[in-house]
Amino acid sequence: ETAPGGGRLFGGPSLAEARLRRGARLLASGLELFGTRGYGDTTVEDVCRHANVSSRNFYEEFDNRLDLLRAVSAGIAERALAGFVAAEPDVAAPLTVPRARLRVGALAHALLDDPRVARVMFVENVAGWARYPDLMDDIVGPFAAWLRTVSADHLGARGVPPGRQAALVAGLVGATIGVLADWVRSPG
Image 1 (cartoon, one colour):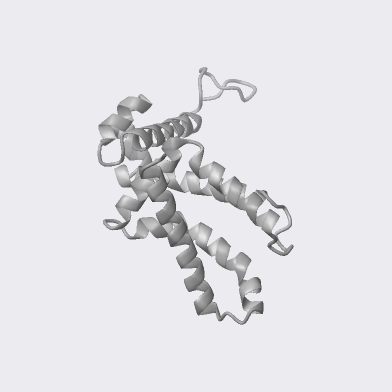
Image 2 (cartoon, rainbow, N blue to C red):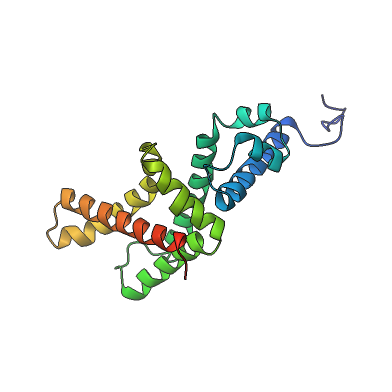
């Protein structure tokens, strides 16, 4: 209800604002708990307790725990890809070694500086891929698609057919994830 002049009659956030804040708390709790305890050792009730929301509120935002993991991971992947792309503003310029190092460095920092992020992306998600195959496409797909687009001209100019280009990108992405998963599981 609004007061004369368009202001809110009662103080506090609107329902939409409250829902956004609740969703953000659930995502932050998902990152914290999946990134420290692990997906398998975290229940919906744990997430709700940590986020200070009811289970009814959880299910208004997410279908289940896997849906929360997807959302947490998608947010991480989106921020990491944005940092990777933003590391060099001229995407049309040739992929030089310094530019590649800059981008890989930005991506590595986005994914590895926070141990919780690294665990979610390279341990919890990788473990879930066998049970939920579409989880890999949800998380890795946008990065692989971007990499295919960026490398298409370079590889095409060298006579690499599109099918082989896709296989090379898939291999590169898979190998990178494998190396990072091993590193996260056994640092040092």
